[in-house]
Structures are given as structure tokens and as C-alpha cells.
Length: 188
Length: 361
Image (tube, one colour):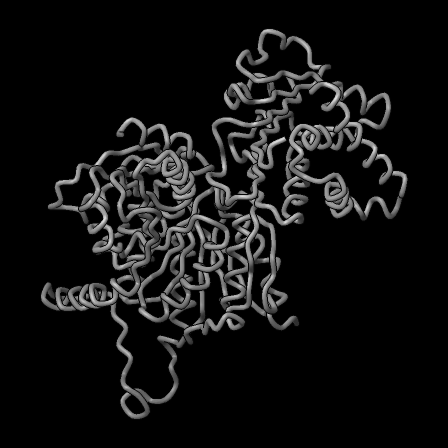
């Protein structure tokens, strides 16, 4: 997989796309790589889809937003529609298999379109609350931009205070990360 | 109370607004005055969180006119003072900023450009160039640094205080909403650890002693009775401006020397242009980039030299020709044609720049 990546993560408010973006870029930064993350914010976010623009590279990063993503991850029907504009012929488009009614809205020009059962896996195998970490695993699985151990360290940094109270949460989150990676790798 | 905000050097990953607050702390800024407006809010938020730990102060005013004037007040009292604003707030702040020009008051103003005109978007633009450089009823005796990375936000916020107090012109950091909200890495440092000495501040008022006996009388004036009086004062300001402009002006060049297409861009757009130039050079195309770091004063001579040898100058900006006006003015008399890519209130990517340049070649 390419060393650098432009990633657009989109979902409904509360699905955690911004915190996923934050953890991934922190992990890349800790790894000594160039990382840039910008959320869509302000009025553009109100009542709309939450989008996180992430870039990780070994070179200095250009403009904060980009035209075409290497990976698009869309977590709701509206996110699927909204993120069409970031898809080019080299883009891998990932969406959740549980999203209904988007069959006609999936991009036709993407290199690959993958449906992954992240919502289902989180709900049935893990816990709905770690859905965003499953997604984080999917991003890492699809791009290879961050080392798994580094990603775990970044999660630890962000959620460590919760893990201290309940060590089982650590296991749950790390499992979610690994499952997310598997889900994409099965499809790729 | 903690001693220095930053000891030595520190690698960090944070938003631009946070960077500005840290830089102002590191520069020894004593007080910030402000009124909330997106996208600069977190400068205030971080400052109010950090400042008390280091004995610094903050005053929230009733609006931006007041924030500008209280910043002037802080400086008159000899404090290293600053303010931050954006868009419509910057509009309101033009009255105090022109007073700072007239009275040579070294205020530091951080501007995070949002879309315009008026309320428009809270997101991003380069549409506050004309206003930050030339707003108010004056001649634009202001120093404007247009930053493009978090490292520069840190470096130039520190520098702005020194430039302001050294030359006694209002000094502006011209950022934008993207720089405010994005996270990237930079190295923060204690200026002293890099041999940067902060220019000492001094009060304009309440200087102590008896005027006429212990010291010269201090005549602070912002109103003039006759045209001739005013003329002399303004010509004095502008003569200093012309004298110091060459040593204040800063710029960067990327493959500009033999460029047939010379792209001119500032602020965050330079990032896209630098990437585009790299790609176009790899294709063997003679494309270069001239990036003014200071928009006021502009490194005119250096720009003219490059533009003269180019076949075409391409101005790229997230505004409808605000940078282009400044550039065209300084290239007057040259025959090199000027082309434009104007995207008011919208970001520019490297791919777009490559596409636009390819149309010219």
C-alpha cells in the first residue's frame, strides 16, 4: 500500500469520524510522519454530514483539503452521497454494509467499492460504542499509513484514563481495531 | 506560578489557534484583548486557559472596535499586547488599526480570514488581504505577515511583536480558517533558546518624572488642525515606511530563477503551489513560484526581477484579485502578461494548480 494517503472520513454527528481522524493523525505524528487533519466545521457542519480530511505522508503536506481522496469512508446514507465528490479512478470507496437505499448512489468511477459490516460487527461481536475504532481499523487496514502498535498507543493516549478504571475496555478497543483491519483486508 | 511557558524546544501536534496562543505566551505577550468570532475563537480560549498560569491577562470587550482600542491602550501603557479577529470583526477593527498607523502604536493583530463579504462563511478565504493591508482611512503603513504553516504561525507571531516594537508600525499575522482549525506538527521553542531577543516595550503614557525637567514632554496626538500639519506628519510616517520597507519585506522562491511560468501565491495557497511546482518540474516544465511572506511591505524588486524573465505570471488566490491588485501594481511597466486563478472563499489544491498551469504551457 502507498506510504502516503489522503483520507476522507464522513458520517453523522456522533459516529466519531472526527475522533478517529484525530487518533490516526496523532499516531502518524508520533511515528515521525507528516500528518494533517482538518475537520469541516462551523456552519457547513450544522445539520449536515461531518467530514474529516486526513493526510499522512513522508513529504510536507500541501493544501489542507484535497480534491480526490485515496480512501473514502462513508458511514451513513447522506455521507455516501456527500463524499462522491472526493472519488477518483484510484479511490477506494468504503461504506458500511448496513446502510440502506444507497445502491444507486455508490460511485461508479472508484477503483474499488467495498461494503464492510462495521456496524454489525461492533454491535454483535463487540460493543456499539467501539464502532468508531472498528472504522479506525478499517482505515489503517486499507491504507497501512500507521503501524498497528502505534495506533494502539494512540488509542491508549486518548482513552487510557478510561482503561485504568476498566481494563476490559482496552481489550475491547484493541479487538475492535484488529477486527476493523480484518474487515477491509478480507475485501481488498 | 510556572516560569517559562516553553523550556527549550518541544515538538507538538495541534491546531493553529492553539499555536498562536502558545507563540504569544512564548513571546512574552502580557495581555490579549478580544471579542469572540469564528474561526479565531480558540486563540482566546487557549489564551484564557494558559495566560493565568504565567501571570498574563485577558480582557473580553463588548465588540471588536473596543478590542482594537483596548489593545492600543495596553500598548500605550507599555504592555506587549495583542488581539485576534476575523471577517466582520476585522472590519470593525479598522478604526483602531488606522489610529495605530497614525500614532505609530505597535499593536499586534492576528487575523484568521473567513469567507466574505459580510457574515458569509466561518470557514476560509484570502479575502481580508485588502482590508488587513490597506483598511481604514490611511496609507497602509502596516506590516502584514501571511503565514502558510503552523511552524510559520509560531515563528511569525513571535516575530510580529518584535517587528511592531522595533519599527512602531501596527503588525498583523494574516492567517485563515484552515490554518486555525487544522492540526499539524511544529516545533515550539523558547525564543531565548534560539537567540531571539524580545524587543523591550515601553510606555507611551505615564512615563514618570516631570515633563520638561526629567524628560522631554510627551506629545501624543491624533488630531490635526491644518492640512500642512497633517501633511508633514503623514509624510514623516511614509518616509519611515519607505526607509524600512526593504529590510522588513520577506519572500520565498521555489525554482523561480529560470521559470517561464511564475506562479505568485501567498498564505496557505503557497502549499498547493509548492507541491504543483515540484510535480511540474518533474515533468520537465519550467515553472517556478514566488511567495511573498510579507504582503505589506512587498519584496517588489525581487518580484520584478523574476517576473521580468518569465513568459507569464500566474496569480493564484482564494479571493477575487486582492493579491493580484498588489502584484499588478508592483509589476507596472513590465510587459509580462498576468493571468489569474481566482477562487474567492474556496481552497486551492495542487491538482488544480497543475491543471491551470498546463493550460498555459
